[in-house]
Image 1 (cartoon, rainbow, N blue to C red):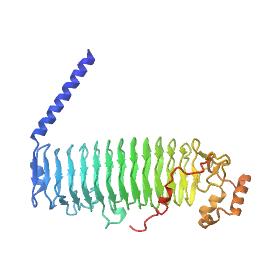
Image 2: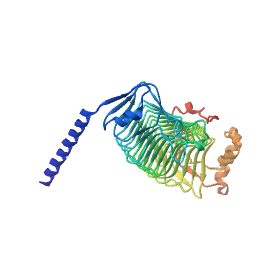
Image 3: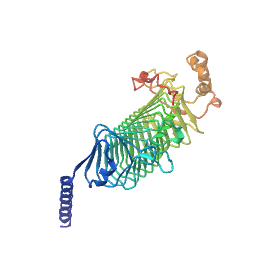
Image 4: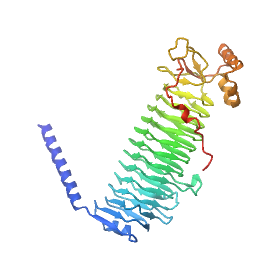
Length: 430
């Protein structure tokens, strides 16, 4: 009987919600801002649920939105903030901003001047198909649930030094965000995320920044199909757990392609990490799965340190990295237990033709350490003298250092298109 009553009450609430929505929709109006008019005045006169359409033109003003409504550009109008304050500040839930060029915020770091600033509690915002350019911070989202930020172009203050810029998208203490298919450049960090949860970051192009992403204390989220390139650092994922990081491309970043720092219980798979200073920088990372990634043409394929031993690293291709692994630890760590990884500098053999090497691969033997110190040594790697040095080092453990060990390395790469990433190197410009 109680179950039936609960169901009846649930149905009544659903019907009431639908009726309220229909009532609001029926009374919603479309208000127009003609060229030369005041956006702020029309927004002030609008009622909850209305749409404010802005005609093509340039509008020099600051806009505050304190009720649920849609602010829509027709013909891509421009709102200029006059290099002071926030261009648009949102104080209400259920606000949509679309099709507008938003530019010229102030430069006060303390006040967090932004192109669009969503105050705490402005839940379910949508920003789509906008150009958010020449602002300190592009889009600021704080203590807001279920934000949707998609298909925007966000360009920071290229005229300022990197440290004086704000971030492209700032997401703080928020849940359920979706950041999709944005193009972000020339800010400080492309997407800065802290103290948030259950978010999706997909399909973004991020370049010419300090960090493509600066991501901390944010769990249960997904990073996929993003491209981060020509930054100081690509994806910086720190102090997190329960992430899925897949199908991303990180290339030409001067420091690292993907940083996994103090990260647990996460899956990192099918990423391409090419032409970076360090492909992967793995620090204090445990209980993660790192599989089926292409790591090619980096100065260091993987920099592994700070006790990052309890990870499953398998099925990856490590190809033509100047130093395959830089390993800082006091004991061996084993990779490739299930499938084996491919190492382009593997010097063993496969007598039975099963696709796996007959002797173990050690990523940090004496030859690899010398190659890291003297890059020109790579020209001699196939010479009899170098092969003899490897053999002697194996016979005399006193020469051996702790290493990443792959007992059954694959002899063929899984990724057959790896050569297309050969020329991905850092861009020397801004």
